[in-house]
Length: 407
Image (cartoon, rainbow, N blue to C red):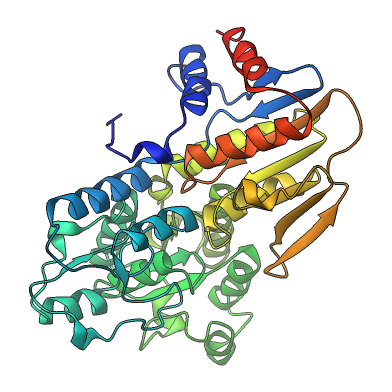
């Protein structure tokens, strides 16, 4: 795996030690069992995979290298480079300006951008329409493109499906930048429709087998399908691809469900003429992080902390997995931990910050899961651990000694 040049203040020697121990124990990434760090009063349960992924580190390296190499140029980002407030705030303070926000609202008028400026594409990629707009301004997007290679892999697969006359079903959140980009790139080759979850896939399945009609389709999937989409024609041959941060298990469930509907309509013998196997579009990092998180469900923990940006799709799915079994808290940083009684955490369903009290059970040993999303710096995870341990009167030296005992 390539080593990326990421600012040292996003790193953590302690988290690096934990990951090093895990790699030593499992060099081939075949064991998703977590690491348990016994500190007497508390046992920290750390998943096999968490934190920065390949695509995120690649994007950060390109962005900071661009700043270093172009001290006298104006530098813009099409939108947030990744969904993490610490990284985006740091880039902003270093002089980078964001052209749009996460919802696509314009923050800087396109007319302000000149051919002498640098424009960086975020890790999620961008739409063909924006690519064209920037190109018309005389700016070369390819030089400073941080689009994740695994996102581009999905685009390439969608294009191949289109070349073979398949319609692409995109498992994703239609308002998310990556899904918008995938939808746009897919439209250049074929028709597409976006489904968010298995319930929407089931509705689409009813359209395929004729239980629901065209009018039902157009109403239910409003703003989520290609211009000129005709369900009677464009759902005869389909392939499923995913927004790389969605639940991999749900993508597989959606693909399998639609496969059964096509068998129901056309028969098993004709399936190969109507359905494309697209399991190879799943992101390895999403798979690993989610598999490691599922393994945490077997640990008998008392509570869990999930650290990351509140608008991070991959982080929210890790939280959903853990929340189903444990009291779980979605936090952005150590600042969310007010003291050993009070915590500020994100309520995913209500999409707002909630204040909770007595979040740390009074028992020993207290078993705590700590994990983070693919866009969360290790340094932030380190700070959360340090603050929690300070609440429990456990010093850093005790923590380091416990780590040495794991080797």
